[in-house]
Length: 381
View 1: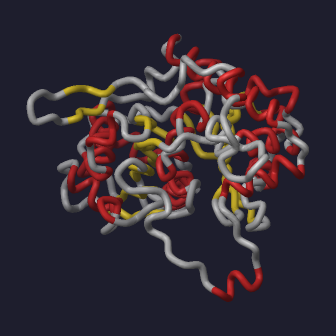
View 2 (view 1 turned 135 degrees about the horizontal axis):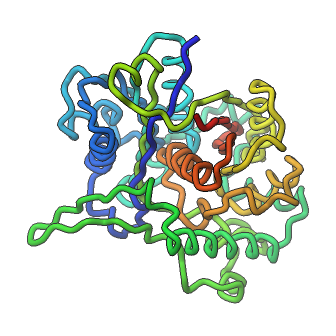
């Protein structure tokens, strides 16, 4: 079978809520990232057969199949097809799955898996409606923040543990920016102003002014006397990312140099009430399918939806002694979690960190709303 090769992966800088990227539509933001991707590879976008675009709130400016709209906005030819993917927080990781499977099956040769979310312009949850009574007869569905509280309670994580993890996430992200670790994945975004144009080039979400003391002062965000706060939750933000996935035939024909390959994927369905605790199971399935164990994995990215989710993953996966190998450059708490874009974003970060460390295998995993998780194993080539 053909291999699904990762040629390149890029992302926008992450814009804080109502920050720099709030001035640009999601389809225009995603279009710029798509163009930066093909420009880096000196690739004619007409060669691309499909775009799989992760996006959660598919309404308003993010509606009408943004997976098709963004390439058209970017000026790509009409021959490039596009589809929009919604696996909630794992949407663009599912885009990786879809694109990789299409290439591995020999159905497509050159696909972009991408993701975008403008949470400033299209509020989270705006595309949803009332839940079905039949669903609620069977399941107690609670907001994700309440699920994060339930995880903290069941796994006995204290407020101090959650805040300590969150402070470390900011420290790592700030150090990564200072050391230029994101330079090979972040592409500049043009933000148009009636009077003067500007380039947005630097993540604005990590907080240099935070401290354990400042985090401790925040009030619980979801449950009175709870432990989950805005400070130990992922940030609402704006961003886009894209991954170029190709067959060996396409790479040879177009002179593309692959950097890695998708080895395997794993999915997990879990209790919709706890909702956010499936990362270890999805990861184990991806590892098992690849014939690998945790000792084979050099770098791990777990989406920091909440600090309790990341700590639960570390504990249940038996990785507490390897915490330095997990999100070494920060994560959703410090960098932000632009829902539909995060899967592609952590793929780019994982790839670059593997190269920096000269590692062979990396794993990325994400919890998913309403009780799912998704994971992927990649290998440098």
